[in-house]
Length: 279
Image (cartoon, rainbow, N blue to C red; front, side, top):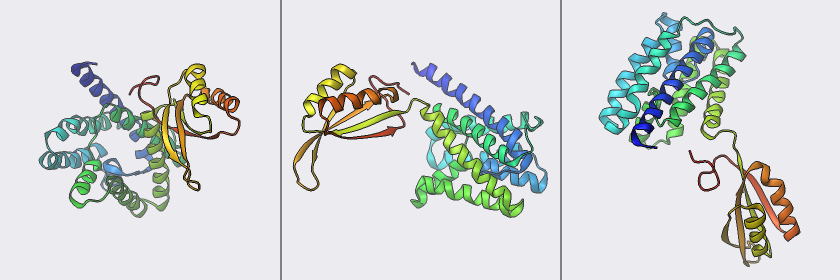
């Protein structure tokens, strides 16, 4: 993919993701006062307290954060966040009159969180950002050494706690549900349904197993050097990544080659490279 095509795809993903976030925000979260963190959550609190439309609050917070980030984090940062910081509030404003789909707070928190997470996942796949408190978290991380994840959690926690105080305690509980749905959906959009499996095999005849995996399963493998924790004996550990549908065949092949082999199989969220999809 050329640089221009990649840039176009990034912009399209940013626009599509921002629109999805805005629709989910206005049709699920705003009507029921579910402030699940970030600048969007702050804009809901301000809306409930003053009546100011959320889009204006988002612009009012995003623009100063953007310029502070530009000053402290550099132009590379600015290029990735400028468009998102402007477009997301614009879409929020454009869709502000759309009618909510439910008046049930539980459904709104779940589906609002899913919609926001799907939108953010698209934005992140485009290697872009919508600005907001993520910028503040980056600044806090850079100048205090606090882990980025902890900094984000602190800001989101403050917003949710404020919702519980200023609106109602139940709103904070629903906001936590929405935040959880958002985080899980972001992971899903980033990695997709194609969950692979990674197998670690310890056997007295690793070469035999390696041959059946290479030729009968048509998968590559890696040989790792291991040592028994109790005996200290050197052992070869085979590491094999397979698709979910190949697990049964792998187990059958290993059992036929060495019935006493020790096998560990676990999920791996994303695999990139030969034989697997590339991001």
